Length: 167
Ligand SMILES: [Fe+2]
View 1: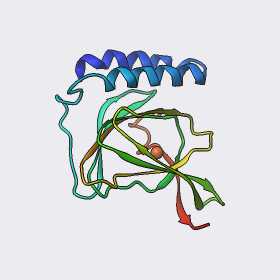
View 2: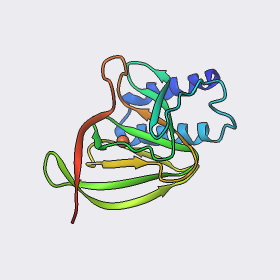
View 3: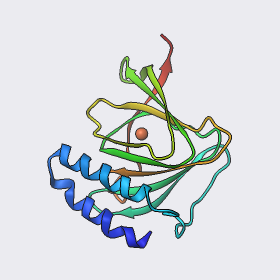
View 4: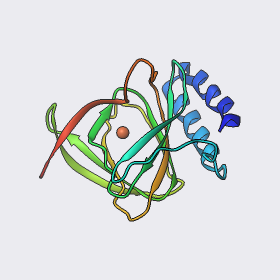
């Protein structure tokens, strides 16, 4: 992974660019990283049964980059972000469910997608983008996430969590 740190550092430097240009750079960076065989071979990945783990692989004052390992059954809360959120699926399939907020604490499902290996997303928090990510399959999944926050100052990229309500 060390050899790719320069790539991430260049992306961090692009944080001062207009949003669209930064997101394009993030997408290109993820595309390059995702095409590297055994990208995470030098990274000690933690795992937890039935859940997901975040493994920091790069961090500075502009962004933090995490490898997330999704065990079968893992799921995030329904959440939005206080910062940009870009990710690539490196292994397996992740279900991504989208929601609309009904109020400050409740959300209703609007769409669900399978994000297969190679899928790349790059978005700002102001969509608004409320989603949940899950591993519903029988196999482990791995993704790499680039968030626009300093991990030394904030504990996660999540701004607010929501409870699901039905139509
Ligand atoms: Fe998210």
